[in-house]
Length: 185
Ligand code: ADP
Ligand code: 5GP
Image (cartoon, rainbow, N blue to C red; front, side, top):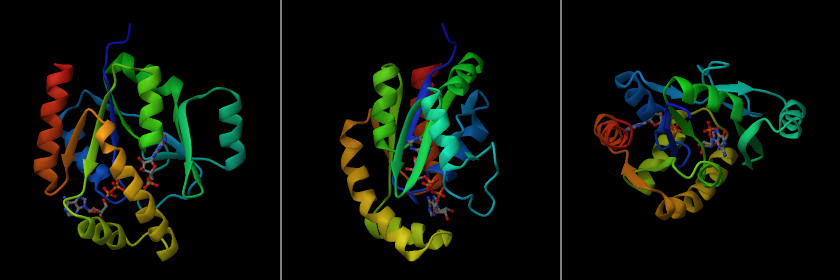
C-alpha cells in the first residue's frame, strides 16, 4: 500500500497551472511533482528533470514499448507521458501532483480510481488568450493550435471532481490547498 494520494491537474495551456502549482507546493512540502517526459523543446527557464524530461521521439517510443508510462498522449504534434515507476516511487514518499491534459487525466482515473481530478479554469476566454500570448514563448501558429484545443479541454471540465478558477494566483492556490487538505489530511 502506498502512503500518498494522487492529485491530477488539468487546464488549458496558459491558464496558469504551473504558476499556481508552484504556490501550492511551496506551502505543502509533502506534495511531490510528477515530472513528465515530452518531445517538445524546453522553454526559457525550464529545467531538465524538474519541469520535464526532454527526450526525442525515438526515445519516447522506446519508453512506450517498454511499458514505462502510466499514461501518454500526443497533442499539438508533441508527445507527453507520465512515467509510471516514478509515480509509484513518489507515492511512497508523499502526495503526488500530476499536470496532464484531459485524456491523460481520464486514463489515470481508470488505473487509479481514487485519484482526485482538479480542473483549472481561466477567469475569461480573453484572459486565457492574453496569458498565453503574453508568455511569449510559442509561435503564433502554436498559440492558435493551443487555443483551439483549449475549447475542447474546457468542455471536459464537467468530468472533473473539482473545478477552480485562476483569477488571482493566491486565491486559486488557497482553494486547491483546501481540497488537498480535505482529501489527504
Ligand atoms: P500553464 O502552466 O497553465 O501553461 P503558466 O503557469 O505558464 O501556465 O502561466 C501562463 C502565463 O500566465 C504566465 O506568464 C504567468 O505568469 C501568467 N499567470 C498565471 N497565473 C496568473 C494570474 N492569476 N493572473 C495573471 N497572470 C497569470
Ligand atoms: P506545456 O507544453 O504547456 O507544458 O503542456 C501542454 C499540455 O500538456 C498541458 O495541458 C499539460 O497538462 C499537458 N501535459 C503535460 N505533461 C503531460 C503528461 O505526462 N501526459 C499528458 N497526457 N499530458 C501532459
